[in-house]
Amino acid sequence: MAEEPHWRASVIRLAVSVEGQTEEEFVKRVLDEHLRPLGVAPEPILIGGSVTVRRLAFDMALLYQSHDSVTSLVDFYGFPRKGDRTVEAIETHLREKIGERVGGGWDENRVFPYVQMHEFEGLLFSDVEVFATQIDFPPDCMAALRAVREQFTTPEDINDSCETAPSKRIARAIPRYDKRLHGPILAEEIGLDRIRTECPRFDAWVRRLETLGTE
Image (cartoon, rainbow, N blue to C red; front, side, top):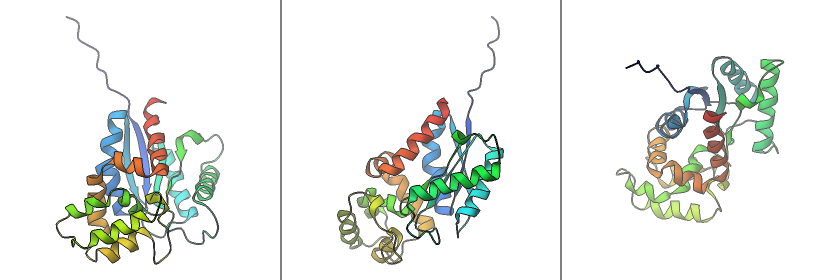
């Protein structure tokens, strides 16, 4: 019998420029499990705090050279001096700056900046009941979290002021909340499907990532 030819499915190497360790763990624990069977291997690249358009564009332009595709997962909340700009305006600005750094002939289809509206913690409001499963969370935190969720059409609408950003609301309800420790765990427990159902903008981003393996 003739030996079968060696075959290995091609995998799209996707760089995900992330703001912090919470987002880094989310990519590793949640996105990777979903995307890898679709032929996309996301690799979180930590950029650290104080994200600016200039700094993120610089990093993503470098990642463009070493990966098949590049995206980002950073909070709209954290962008300094954003003024009246929308999240879409910042993404467009990022794309323009990345193009300038990469230079002529760059493939725009390989690059799609994504800015989370308003903050990663907003995704956790997709199912606040999951918070009750964390053994070190006080029982009375649930009423506060439910009250927040009921005020907004989607978790992505929870606003980004210094007092009312999603992370600030969680910290008030749960003083023990540790963003780095609990954030990825809660997201994993809520599940990607539920988050996508509750957060349409986030869902559109994931759908774009899913197509990379078929392009």
